[in-house]
Length: 418
Image (cartoon, rainbow, N blue to C red; front, side):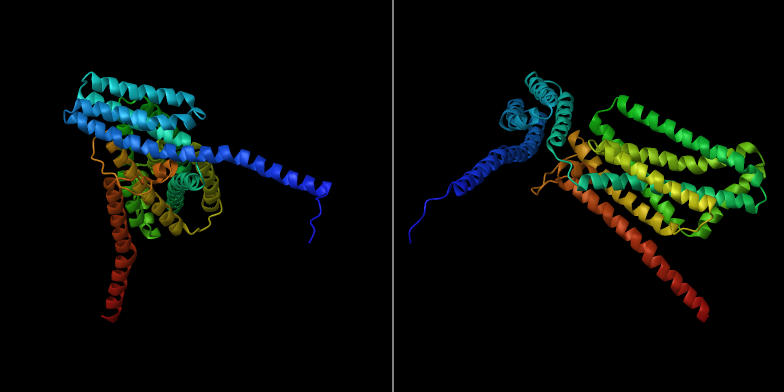
């Protein structure tokens, strides 16, 4: 068979295709190289963190030369590789982190007290988390978790507040004390205003508190965990409408016995401000571990506010009976999961501050944004505590939703046959 020379149009098509392939390779090459550089950067950051921990251990053991060598290696052999992709994103962060490495090395060389080396190491570890964030993409999971946590905080606390207000109004109507609705509303309004002031004050205190960032994160998270557990189990114990009614009617009866406007203002204030205090605490703790995702936290709160508006209108204005028990149980479940995330982050913060031993685990680490939100970090201490807390919740759920109902059914059956 004789091959014919290619025609001019055919040659043009071939040349065009080759040019397109070359262009794609030219564009994809740097992008693939950048992705590879960033992936290596994440690995180098983690290796540098490990070496910093070993340097601190060596210094505490009196091996100053070894501590200096390890801190120098953490910078020269590992952070140096991070600087290349980081300079394109945040050159100031590169410079700040370099200064922190230098400060640590200088203090080790000068024989500074162990407390100073511990503080330098904690500060540098925090800076490396910031570097990790700067190199990371947010993805889909982390914004979704931030949105969900934020929505659940405001929606659950808000639904409980709306429910308490509805019970109070119903109790006033039943007790022929409708003239006290206005003082009750004044108390509710004062509670909302006080919650806003408390949020501003809490933000200010966190900014100026004379504590290291790591210790502040740990303390805030642990307080939030304790309150989350207490609130969730208190709520579950009063899920039955009858119990809630009895609880609030007793408070209304006390206010009516006092017969003063101040008593009903105080009743409305305390009913709502407790929910507001919890909301402020939970949002402050969430904000500490959702850096870079605050937009999604705000969007979650905004969506919850809209949903609460609908729930409040349906209950307070239309008198509708909504499926509140599933809402409250679901909200409590999400907040309990949030407490697991908070306790994991508290453990990690205490480890970064060298107040708790860290045993690294050789398994893939979650992306930094997702790790900060879930509290899942590659240390055995954090994972063991999180697993233990989940086990406690599982046992508590089995007791409340399986064992107790079964016991009540057996008691009813025994009574019926007696």
